[in-house]
Amino acid sequence: MVLADLGKRINNAVNSALSNSQDDYTTTVDVMLKNIVTALLESDVNIKLVFSLRNNIRATLLESKSRSVNSAQTKKLIQKTVFDELCHLVDGETQPFLPKKRKQNVIMFVGLQGSGKTTSCTKLAVYYSKRGFKTGLVCADTFRAGAFDQLKQNAIKARIPFYGSYTETNPVRVAQEGVAKFKKEKFEVIIVDTSGRHRQEEELFQEMVEISQVVKPNQTIMVLDASIGQAAEQQSNAFKESSDFGAIILTKMDGHAKGGGAISAVAATKTPIIFIGTGEHVHDFEKFSPKSFVSKLLGIGDIESLLEHFQTVSNKEDTKATMENIQQGKFTLLDFQKQMQTIMKMGPLSNIANMIPGMGNMLNQVSEEETTKRMKKMVFVMDSMTKQELESDGRVFIDQPSRIVRVARGSGTSALEVEMILMQQQMMARMAQSTKGGQRGPGGMPGMPGMPGMPQVPGMPQISPSMMQQAQQKLRQNPGMMKNMMNMFNGAGGPGGGGMPSMDEMMKMMQDPQMQQMAQQFGMGM
Ligand SMILES: Nc1nc2c(ncn2[C@@H]2O[C@H](COP(=O)(O)OP(=O)(O)OP(=O)(O)O)[C@@H](O)[C@H]2O)c(=O)[nH]1
Image (tube, rainbow, N blue to C red; front, top):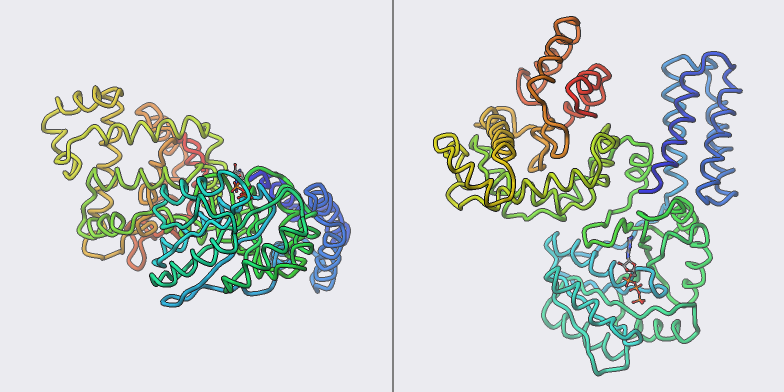
């Protein structure tokens, strides 16, 4: 998200206030606010909204009894007040409609041409379909040549049933027939894509009114391109007059620094933003919640979104099989392959890293391109294994090293690269073994790819023997560090400790300065 820069600037402003021991409390608050205000205005957030945020933060902080910025209580108050006010800035404070299971929910899309309507229709269809709703897509865009083909291609790729016509030119009739067909077939979510025009024409508004009258949507969603920044407010007001939409999807949040302006402008209209589009791929779609958004913006991480995202891209059957294996203390190469494929489907790694507390800068270590290349190689290696090898615990390769050479040849990699993958799978298998019998739960995040073995996040530098030696030397020179680390691991794994850390524990460790120092020495950025 391009908004990372805004988040960094706000963070810097807060952090320098927290560490300021020279100025008095009021001056510290004012300097912090000046920096936050400048950052928000430069991100195209409406000036009135920015000043209201500034006044609210100032009033809350100056009302506080404590006047020393050094007190832990004041520090907490500063952080909490800024966080809450940023949430308030992007919160429409209205609850959107939520489709109900075993009911027929019709959702109609409206928006200008090129805003990302068709793409978002498919993304939403995939979202609901992955959550067990029987979902269908109707293309009522008869205006743009190729619109039906676009929706059809997207729908086929995503395996979503669709309806449209190459010959019918009346969009109202297509919408009516499509919805009627899906209703008859007991579909639970029926999404209707309508045509967009390049400007807000009377004719377009009339068409939307007519379609709405025949399909009687339970929810109308307006799609807005975030790159228009605060102009989003004016555009959504213009649409509101003819189409009573109850929710907004903001697209192209990946490509524009003005996204913050668009979100706050829309929130000011009290229409809930339900999703944001963060790329062209069908899975580049995030459920919008003010807290999650601000957490990610400030680099606090957002496990909720990560799990949401994982649920959308993962194959339920595969995840279930892997979880069953882990519970029995197994982690086969096939499990590893499936997890890798899921990670690859999760979209740009920087998006994922941003959701994990403390991992936002992981990719600074290795470029995104290089990371993806390494991950692809891992998938190629596993694709070159036989079914029997994949379903094994990996020891067949240790017994017959000639298999390693064969796989390396088949995947265009080296024997060393194959060995590295086997080593990673073995490490995960050992962790699975340690969780056997449910004594400590699966550890890490259930079914979360790569998570049980955080140090093996693909793309992160591998630990070479010489790095290990250096780290050991550093540990010998600094026994306190070792003790601290041991304590952390011994305390992990729930009551009794000594086990695999849970996700929460893992996150705490990752944020611990000593752990971060350790990780640097091992050549792994956190
Ligand atoms: N980067 C990025 N591109 C997006 C996003 N959503 C859609 N797009 C791209 O925006 C372009 C327009 O998207 P469409 O879905 O065709 O737009 P539309 O609103 O249906 O357009 P009409 O059918 O002409 O009204 C396409 O190239 C999409 O791939 C997003 O969230 N991020």
